[in-house]
Amino acid sequence: MRMDRRLLLVHAHPDDECIATGATMAKYVSEGVDVTLVTCTLGEEGEILLPELSHLASDQEDALGLHRREELGAAMAELGVTDWRLLGGPGRFRDSGMIGTPPNERADCFWRTDLLAAAIELVPVIREVRPQVVVTYDDFGGYGHPDHIQAHRVTHYAIALAAGATFRTDLGPAWQVSKVYWTAFPRSIIKAGIEAMRAQGVDDEFTSMDPDDLPFACDDALVTTAIDGQGFLPAKMAALRAHGTQVSVDGGFFALADNVGAEAFGIEYFRLAGGTAAPAPGEDRETDLFAGLD
Figure 1 (cartoon, rainbow, N blue to C red):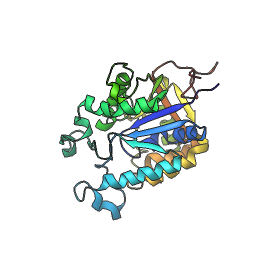
Figure 2 (cartoon, rainbow, N blue to C red):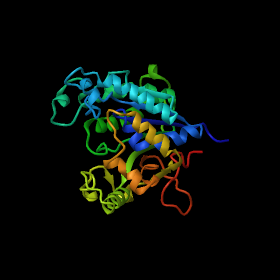
Figure 3 (cartoon, rainbow, N blue to C red):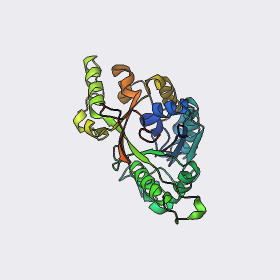
Figure 4 (cartoon, rainbow, N blue to C red):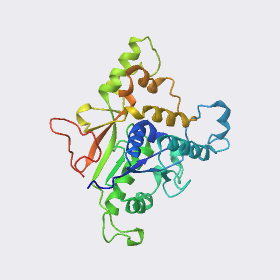
């Protein structure tokens, strides 16, 4: 009998979940997997792409977080995810901005939160949901954003704490996660996209970049798992559009989808960080996050 599969994803800000894992989430929901998203902050410091909502910015009304929470709910509806949560509740941890900026100096920002204090908020979620698989970022947070790095640290610490039979029994019974993955964007895919866009005469900030220097590009040899969610690319793009204050899918990085096709965004990639890889015989990569667990 096939086990009841449960997947937990931990992301830093609203919209991060769609960019790296949107198709994967929609795919597993369609297969009956229990998918839970935990978002660590409301993204209060995000740049606002919609001029008519510029008044929500942190240096004006400071109401962007509440709006992004609504965007997150709309995005999850597009992906079919019904269990989505904010770490510690709405506003518990504030968007940190980038290193060297005033928001990063705030005592209440996620980056400066005590690691145990943040992990304690995730432990009961892990023990309640009991996921076999957890997804988060690598130790560089993908591209160095402080909140992504902190999400990585908090997730790994919480996984370890949740497994301890004697640790805070008031937070629920112990649970051992079987596999942990980090999101990944293979360098070869990004390079192919940039080359295709250049060949079509696209000349913008993204196409001017050197794929070998992009901080979020992952060496292909490190990628262990590829999830084919090409059939769910429309849902992913609709979810991205729901994050209207933050995402414009009409150009830049998101133009990869038009220039490379569904492989650029419909196939999502991961690095196994904990547990045992189980690719099919003759294959180099896994095609299922739950491979080897049934």
